[in-house]
Image (cartoon, rainbow, N blue to C red; front, side, top):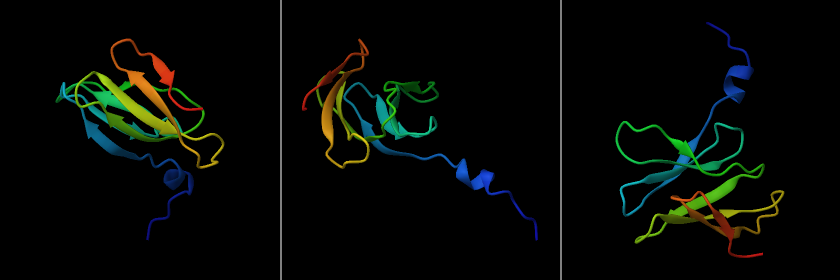
Amino acid sequence: MRQYDIERYLNVRNAGGADLGPDGRLSFLLDTTGTGQVWSVRGPESWPEQHTFFEESVSFVDSSPERSEAVFGMDEGGNERAQLYLLNYESGGITELTA
């Protein structure tokens, strides 16, 4: 039986929480940077684009049904009190909605 180093299993990445916007953009959370962040793809065979770059993990992303925007949640230091943010996909701007 072949044995593998533990590092191999510690480097497993996860993607999830996918959401489809009105313009066909697929938004999802990906932890390839070490923490879950908002990424999206515009269509089949397009390259994924990272939209958030926080030290904290983003917990969810939900696309607007009408505009090129999404709301995402993130807590501070694992305190489980998710704050809401608005992401404008066109400008890249992020607006804090709750404090």
